[in-house]
Image 1 (cartoon, rainbow, N blue to C red):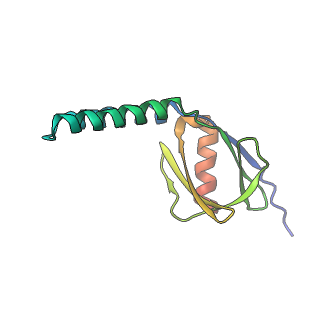
Image 2: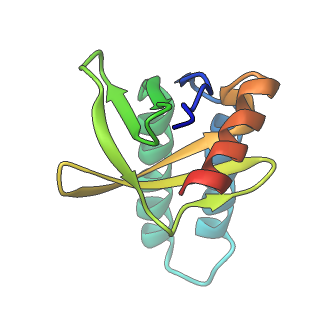
Length: 137
């Protein structure tokens, strides 16, 4: 019987500057939309306040790093907030592109989604993640 000698893939998914830029851009567009409509002034001010509060909240939220592992036993696992690794099931709704992986997975009967931008990993690690996801999910 042939043994699978492929090494375990251990990845530390870090915070992404692309994600921060995307969130800031979307909040800027939402803020502009608050003022480029025919709503009453009081409503424009209220909506603008909500958009600004959301932007400040998103900016201050620390983007938590997490670990993703694919073992040579064909099993995915993840670790969040310095917790031990837990097995995950990658769902078929996961989206893979050259710039972004929308990782949709199930952990402990809960469905979660994580965005993994290209700058969250080294170029080689991002390529390896894409290859493993395409082959093994």
